[in-house]
Image 1 (cartoon, helix red, strand yellow):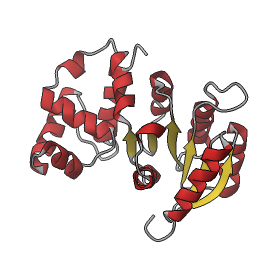
Image 2 (tube, rainbow, N blue to C red; image 1 turned 180 degrees about the vertical axis):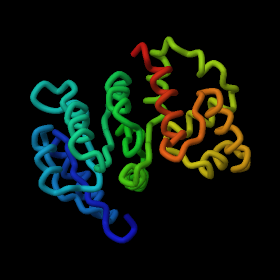
Image 3 (spheres, rainbow, N blue to C red; image 1 turned 45 degrees about the vertical axis):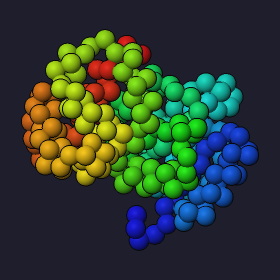
Length: 224
């Protein structure tokens, strides 16, 4: 992604927000290849332009309920390499779990009101486009509140919970270490303990970090 500008398809039903976001992202070096107002147009734009990432609102025409999430799920099925960033003013834990159940890599969910600077949004887009996972803490909390199957989660120490929560938000080991004011080695040890408690042995194929996050989200959000 460093060799060329990030190519973005933007799906937002508000014309004012859509135009404003297009200008802001363009000013930050992104190329908005299409800006559309419906889920149907989103799918058509991705098919036509093959972007690096799609920014999707949840509630779009005609019913303004879950059209965006359903379109995102279809994007994952048809173009799994395209990153998806849900950008909404609503905390929808159940809808987030639906999207994440198809795989956490290359997926993000941020709340509009909590993104204070355009640079934060652009950084999230780059992380998602390169296979990362970015979740607003309120989304994680929303999933946590609905959970009923908590056995493996409850086995974690408070520090391990903090590390896993930051993993779910898409932070690297270095970023987690900085936020918790510990060494990267300490974070690695906590991560190893999480993998062990979640019964995730090392393999050459599976990404244990992603699986740990999915386990966390599914077990804390299973009742949502």
